[in-house]
Length: 90
Image (cartoon, rainbow, N blue to C red; front, side, top):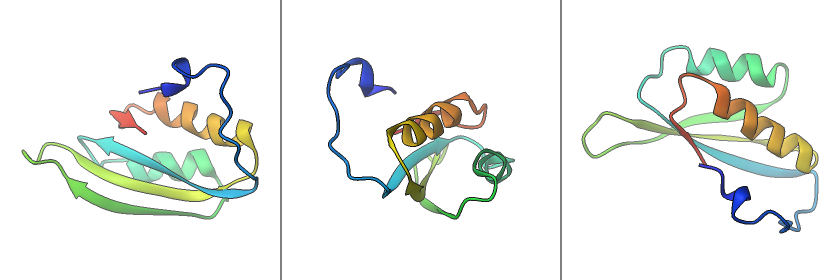
């Protein structure tokens, strides 16, 4: 899901650096933590379980970290979207 297509000329007006959260929805937790470790390398972040879907097929997690600018924030989002274990990123 990428809402930036709906708001192409809008800026969020964030003051960087700031904490940012990504909600990650997956149907497997296998290798998800390894993928995030590889993507974020030596950065500090918090990754925690959020909830299970009603039918139990999907799990959601919150990924929180300090982002330094808009490019950093969107690059992380784009790289998370590429991960085969992630079904939806918000």
